[in-house]
Amino acid sequence: MSEQSAEASATTTAYLLKLATVYGVALAGLYLLAYWGAFNINILPYMSLTDIFKVTAYPLVVSLGSLIIGALVGEALHPQEMFPEGGGKDTPVGKFLNRFKALLGVLYYASIVLIAYFGRTPLKWVVVGMLCGIAAAQFTAETPALRRLFPSRRARTFMVTMMVALLGAAFGHGQLHAERAKEGNGPMKVDGKRSNLPLQESPEKPAVLLGFVGDRYFIYERATGSVIVVKQQDEAPVVLAEIPPEPATSKSQSTSSPHGNTPATGASGSSAQPSPKPAL
Image 1 (cartoon, rainbow, N blue to C red):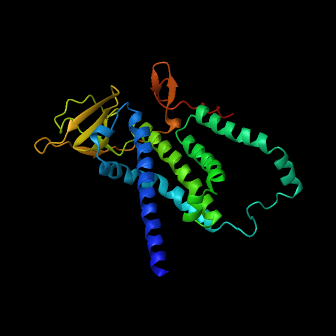
Image 2 (spheres, rainbow, N blue to C red; image 1 turned 180 degrees about the horizontal axis):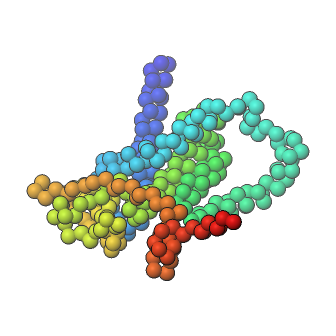
């Protein structure tokens, strides 16, 4: 009996590892699709399977780590006894909502489509992923495969919701990081002069490093909107530097004029102030 139990446990572990690998590839693939797709680049020919995990591990952990931790803490502190599944369905509010369950379902899925279509921020995909995860959990929580892996329905619902939600979050953060790179807020810039690269750059619009994939640097020229691909060579290193933060300027120090921003001064060049009244 113990041998059969050990064999079943080994089979379950192997199945979970395969599932985790497939899910990890899907998660990384969505991030890469969103990030590199913003620059119209198919990055997959430059990558191996191991590169997919190496390139996406750091940004995904940094971006999604807080979401995962928050969800785990919220699930651990969830008062299951106070809010049991299906509780309240016999109350007046529950009966009223169940009467319009079909209509509420249509409105729920319509809201997902509207957010995905009209949302302006890349983080809309985090919301879309969460809403889709909640819906997917309702349809898949009772499937035999999931019931064998997670006997607890609460665990099944949580796992399905989070797995689908993280897919949307990965895609959203990929788009967000691409937008930041286009705005010059990437982590590193390329020093074209020291790297002996004919880059079109300026202090206002530096050339930004998009990533190092395989043995190639992908450099974004903000001045032209072009992506330069440079192969790594020992005799021709690519010099990188941190992008300094933009200096904060006080709006009170300057005002807008047709000829540009000029200091708010009087005719003599000093600050314009009302002249004191003569003493009587």
